[in-house]
Image (cartoon, rainbow, N blue to C red; front, side, top):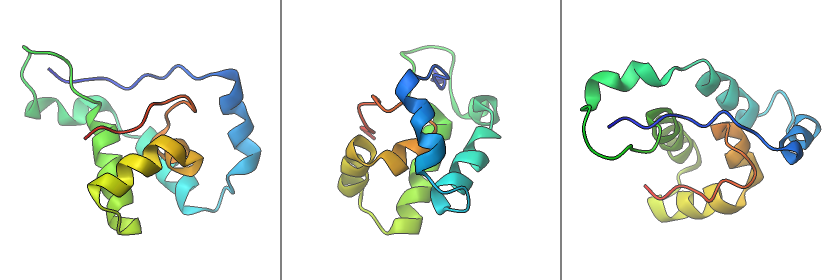
Length: 100
């Protein structure tokens, strides 16, 4: 079953607006992924089973890994502790990190 993105943010997420430069890779990635809809990937999922991670997050993770040259393990750590990575993925600051 296809997972969906959680659009809910926290108050501390508003602080990112002034911390991440608008012309940075991270801001451009966030804008790109925000325009994508989870339904783009719906043909890849069945209607039964437990929900997956949002395919947009998975796609974004892949793009970030390719750009930065990170392994799966490195990306997992970065998505857990690096606020720029969380910002690019459009997740909340308390996001526990990718477990791809």
